[in-house]
Length: 324
Image 1 (cartoon, helix red, strand yellow):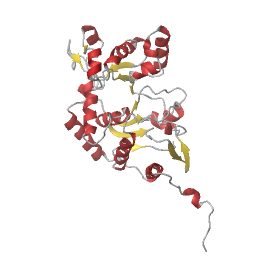
Image 2: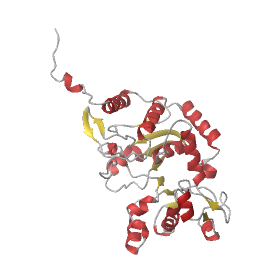
Image 3: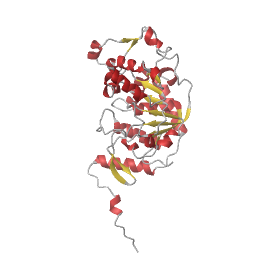
Image 4: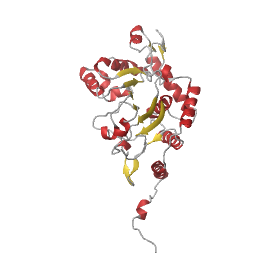
């Protein structure tokens, strides 16, 4: 006797375009594939990075008094000829050198389990917060807010990137006392290392350094990223076919490979819809706001890369609800 079910066809998608089909396949693969760490693959990835980039986390991730010289010109990796004419090179003065640590705070560090937190809206309703906070080291991207999102995104932060453009988008370029106070208040939610890529664009260098000058009013340690480190990682992925500059998320995954024995990714879903408990639902670009989706990075290409790394046991790409 054949048992009939009126719900069977509700489980079948009708694909109106190839994008919907691809998202469906990605989601099902992640949800059904049992992940198992492969330390050998991660070690091979780490060795490739170290051999090809000629930079190290110990020496080059952060500007220090040992990797910058007095009166050295600091190039900015996004500058064009036009911007270079308008803004002369930044020169490492004695005062600037005095703000740099003598050596990297991450020198010699190694962590067992690390989490890299992307800012995707897929984190909403995930209840992954306690799982994230149980990691040994947590990376976060671009000043993502924590207050009000702890249940899903967690609160532990050990390394936070802070793009200088955020200083304009959220804090008006720190041009008056009100904006400065707003920035300081916002930063008090963190107790971590905050990494500023000040030397991406020349016009953002001074506001970025100004933001760091308020270090004595926050609980975090504020540091400046070494431009050669980001550029080397960028070139590494460019040789592997990524056309646009790496997202902060992919950059942090690459960094985590040099510091961590196991890497877990949360909030790395760059699509406007997702499968949640067997149902299709719209997904915001960020878990903390309603900004529309953008294409500044090769999001789809990066996701396909991370999905394959997940299948190879190099990173664990978490999707859906976390089990506590």
